Length: 635
Image 1 (tube, rainbow, N blue to C red):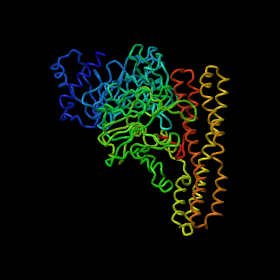
Image 2: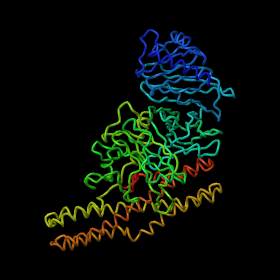
Image 3: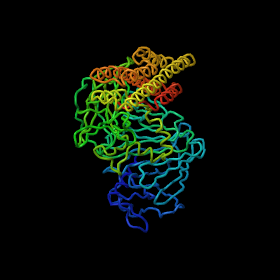
């Protein structure tokens, strides 16, 4: 700790002086995004400012391309966003953020070999020293006298440190003490990990590519991006109150690189606690949106689940909109242009509709002046699989993705979680890991309510003979829509059968998983039960085709006032089928999301279940891909 304080004191003095001194060059301004490598002096934690400044005058950055320098104290890598300090005689790297007013220690990084992380450093080699990137390779010795290596790299303008493991380095220990950690999920709900809710000293989290450690104070998020998801994330928790997640051990797996990034800025994340008594009450947060973005809201429910929503953003005209994934406009993403008309699921006054909840007031929003509000939903149930929307506990808000042309776009100098995924992994791997193809909606035809409105309007104005081709087109499109959603429902039912069989087999194979399987089996079987309950209402695609055929035979040439009434009655049959299908397919999705999250929670509480939980999460992600428009994947 003294060494950390000493280096931090020196860095603070250096920054206060207006920049980094450089041998043979002018001082570097604080905003310079280029990378500089230093041999930082060791200063006692009790050093007086004058003594620190005196040593600072003797220090300077290494000349560019100097890769032969032998460090005498602490190697320091710096750009405009981060300062990374390698502690003397240790492979530990301290990562400080420069993105806020004060230099702040956000995380320390340590290589882990055979479960150990305390090693003696034996050598530091400069592998690259340019203004675009600086790379140092650190050699250290294990207690068994084995030599291991890890490489740290900082690039110009980057808000992350790239680490590359040598042979024998299994994990990277990211120490960023915090109460909350988040595993972002792009197919279901996030997993919000609360140290206060975990009674054990060590826990395992599901193997995911991303981990957010929400540094106390709301001004920093440490984000770990792993190329591999072969192994679970092991976290260590404090023994004393208040409970904290002290460190996360992230596995390199079969890929050699892990990136550690810092999202920093005033109010970059926010925490608020709600209770069941707050249901339906507007709550003005002590937090304003620091910049436009797609802000995600993770609510904790009374049954320890997480419900992930987003913040609606208010436009200058007073209306609220939600941005779609990855920068698209949600109204376009939901509406698919002419297939759904210009409909938007957002209604005036934050009213919104989805097939599960019907009309409701959206529970999280940001006014045009940046003020954020919450209004927890009243407790409800869906599909009789358990209580949901009974918000009770912490709420965590963070910037998931960029905003484009909502009320304003995200400034270029501000970063979000998705930005860091793209920057670290690159476009190709990013698209693969985020599964952008799986995010696309599965849509054919037009919604039955849209076809109804178009055809009814034609008959109301009496232009059916002239617009016969348009009527036939809408009938075909409505039938195609019904057939497509029914295929999706059948896939969910098949998934339920297969998952039930897997859980029954796993229960017999390993008695340790019996309790988890017994918890999930009733939820899984609910897919079959719901289908049986709704079978008469959803009819069949063949029935819809016969309805369309009957319409053509009896109504295409009908005229007069009776024709409009008969048209309304016929089209009501299509919307009855479509509405029943929409509710069923949306409830199926909710059930699968519940299975996915409960499997993740099981890993944290019972690490021995990680294999079965990983299998469940893999299967659930597969079925959640390419939802139909009315599955309400984003409420």
